[in-house]
Length: 46
Image 1 (cartoon, helix red, strand yellow):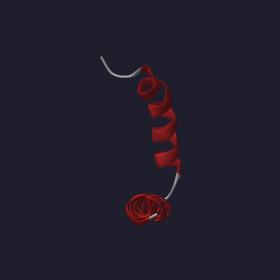
Image 2 (cartoon, helix red, strand yellow; image 1 turned 90 degrees about the vertical axis):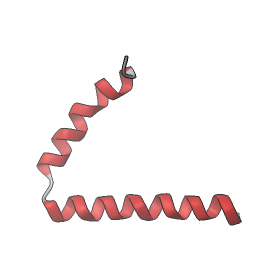
Image 3 (cartoon, rainbow, N blue to C red; image 1 turned 60 degrees about the vertical axis):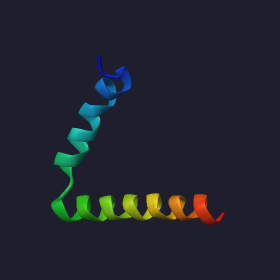
């Protein structure tokens, strides 16, 4: 059984993904990866 939060939030994510251009999605994903990478390095060296 999938988590309930996924069932609630997924439609909003799909709408946002279809509303944005490909370039904006690439930028958003790049910023997300940068954020995750910084948190990872902070958890190791911080």
